[in-house]
Image: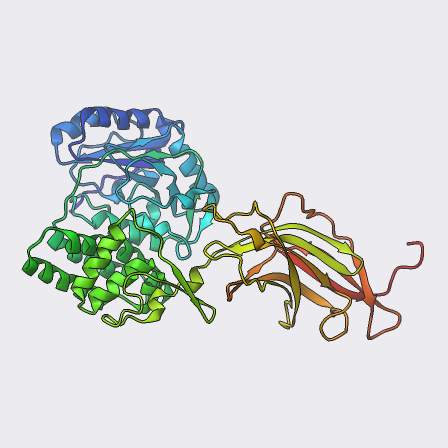
Amino acid sequence: MHTTDPVRPSDLRDVTVVVRLRRQPADALDACFGSLQAQSIGQDRMEVVPVGDEPSLVNRLTGRARGGRRPSPVREWSVSRAAGRYVIFLDGSDRLAVDALERLVSAADADEADVVVGAAEGPSPDPAPARLFRESQAHADLWSSRLYWSLTADKLFRTELLRRRALDFPYTGSTGDEMAFTASALVAADSISVVAGPPCLVNGARPVVDVPVADRPALADRLMRHAESLAPEGARRDHLLSRHLERELADATGAVLSAPLSDDERERVSQEARKVLDSHLTDGALALLPRPLAVQFALLSAGRFAEARTMAAYRADKEKAAPRKTVENGRVFTTLPFFRDPGPALPDDLFDITDRMTVTQELGSVGWNGSILLLEGHAFFEQLSTRDRATKVVLRERGSGAEERFSVTARRDEELFNAKGKPRAMGRFSSRVNFRQTSSGWPVPPGIWDLYLSVSFEGVTQEVRLGHRRSEKVDVTGRAPVRIAPSPRSAEHELFATLFWTEDGDLSVDVSERVPPAAGH
């Protein structure tokens, strides 16, 4: 049982930094505590608590921990004893940037965040995806991002959240405990912020915890059971499970299938992994996984261990060529090993990547020529060629769903490439959207009309909103109404169209019926 010292008002601080000591080299510990002493937030606004298994080391470093109440050297420390409004957990090999705590606390206060995730660099045991830190986010969405993919506790947590949820940081060193703690806090948080820019944290080399191959399926099982306790069945649980399938169980099965084990041992551990999949693998979680891993898991679930081993070797091969794509009836399939192999007879859906096709697009220019809206830009699939183009501009009325489609003219551009440098020469387009005469012969009627691009190549089609990705040359300030046609309903009225940009930066047109201005106005 933890004993709780009383916290007096004069003891309160902005942040408590808990440093876990685990036989780190002396120079690493010196760098860690030196970075804490240099914090721009000021020593009077923080407290530092060294925690570890070696009393002599804790005692020595406790003398360097300043701010708040003098911390006691303890092996275990409870969040109930934190003097800070926020708490962050570091390893003794980590270092903080000089302004790290100031930036993290400022973000937490400004955004009213329960958890703040700062950009980091160095060999993290569970790194966050780099794209998460392209820009700071006041309110990051746990369920549509990969925030949950980083379950290290080197984040800023609101102390009140941890106390309210009875979450205490585990100091046992048991593998998986830190991830379970962080997972619980992330899911419980009402708001999560991301601080991008210069790294807040530099991860040092942590002691390696080597989990025996035979025990890895059990670790994955434990973490997935914990994830299932955090979210009900459905998309959110699938999101959490997909992370543990992609990280822990992928690591476990890859090791099982490739490690130099005896045939009996490999069979036994493969059966354990199969049981984990049978217990936790949902169709929703499977759909979120990279296709090669999904195929490997499907083979394991079917008891096809030899084929699963082949798939694990394929995944591990860094020199393999990119798989070909097969396009049939508007669907795209990746021709991975065992695609339409009559042996395992895996379903085509497992290889379907249609929904993973990504469109690169940009609106290059927009303007009126009388009642015709002229559009130019480019749009193509990153993963497909620009053959068999059937792209259209779609004009859709926001309330009724009524729509009009307009052809585009391809503009060959030999300097147009995808992100990997492959040519997409026929991806440039221009279009004339005639507001005066639609397919019915009448003008576009009054309403809010949103513009979309139905991008179509090689028989594959995906619709994207038009406008939020645009050239700097596009004028987003002009809102002058344009007369497009006499009103079909009243000889005294005319139809006017006004371009505008939504809050998300997309292009829309407001068509209204009004009395035309008097001559000379």
